[in-house]
Image 1: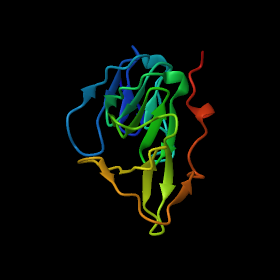
Image 2 (image 1 turned 135 degrees about the vertical axis):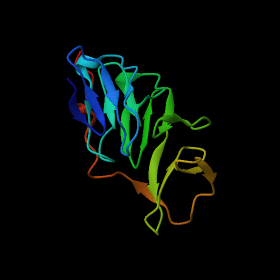
Image 3 (image 1 turned 90 degrees about the vertical axis):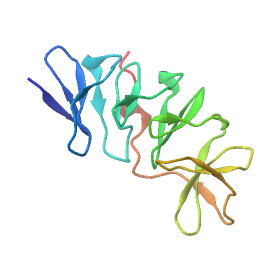
Length: 153
């Protein structure tokens, strides 16, 4: 018997995790690191899903490098000590230590690092773009604090 966890994820009695997605489609088993601690967050306000060892987006294990330092920033952006991620993909060429979000005057959200470059996240491609003038540092006030998805151990 499957029990809904949230965000399209389900778990069975053996702590195997499955993903059904947001549209009608097949039920796929997820390669979860720790099905017993698997949990989900509120869409766009927390990581889509996580457990004590890994993070997940769109039914895929994210290629994070350091679960302890993993932080969800908002607007589908996250980072850890070794990388920056948009949705379920690692975005190469971004410095994770200095990566943060900025907001343009038109309210668009971009990712930026100390290089001064900007990335506009997207499902088809993450585009390296010129930073719009007038961008300001942005912290989403509705994003869950890391303590809500920190590993239990």
